[in-house]
Length: 63
Image (cartoon, rainbow, N blue to C red; front, side, top):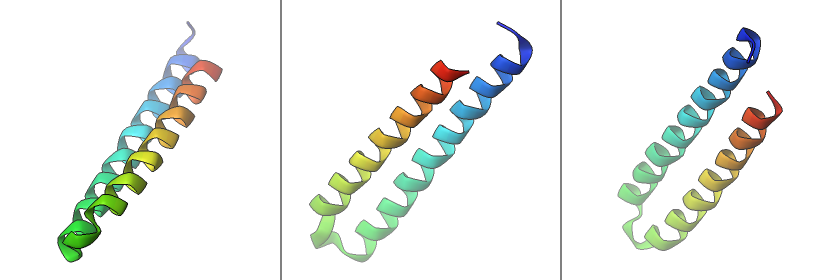
């Protein structure tokens, strides 16, 4: 692998990590504000995290 490819893949992984961290943090804040909506918030969080992971995998394979 060439260096630009490795750097691109690394940036994709960092972006995915930041995105999932943001989703998790915001979900915890939302659950703290509305504990009765836990199920809906968790479902939305998991779907969003899965989509971000998929985009991250696509970016790594494209790099």
